[in-house]
Amino acid sequence: SAVIPVFLSLVWEKTTGKGVSLGTLLGAVCSLSAWIIYASTYEGGLSDFMKNTGRSLPMMVGNVVAIAAGGIICAVVSFYTQNEDSDEDLADWNATRDIDNPLTPWYQKYQVEFDLKPTGKWYERPSLEVFSNFYGREKNIALILGGGISIIMVLIWPLLMLENVVQDLGRFVTWTGVSQAWMFLAAIYIIIAPLFEEVREVYGMHKKNKVKTESDVISHF
Image (cartoon, rainbow, N blue to C red):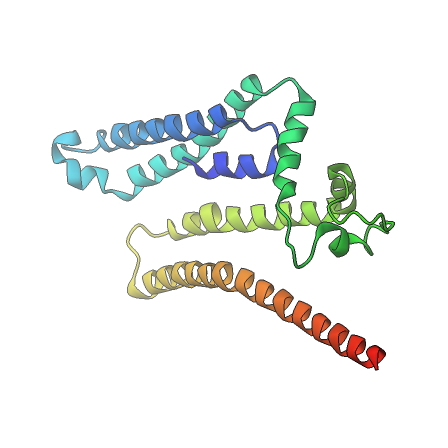
């Protein structure tokens, strides 16, 4: 139930803490209710709790309700509890941009791309509006590809597997293999990519400092 609320907190500036909290909590309540209610419709009802609640369809209904209800509740609550002071919201978002990498400060990193003029103030950075306009295309690509892959893996792929209620060994191995491969590849990338980028930046800065030191020594003589 927290999937869409967390997603909205990253991409929608009007998402509020109340929206995320209520979306997650009430989404979970709706999910459990739908799961239990659907399971009670089978023979034996909830008296045969383990068997009926462990069926595929009640569990799938519970998951779908969790995702949908959490997102809808979060969006509605955030819409009605958002701060009307847009300047204050903008200040909160800009506060997250105060986190800077000393190896590659904002000004140094975006000087060429944004054609920034030297001011001698390393802490000055492009405005949020400049970033939004400059990287609008990349943002749309990320949203479309990310959303498309999520829909394929979360909705379309599981629906295709419902073709047969009872799967043979080959289909089951394919399903679990793809799921596990996706999970491990995503985990490896999430762990390795940031580490690799930081090591590359540190090494690049080390090379620049080494060249600068050698040039200073030569110029001294």
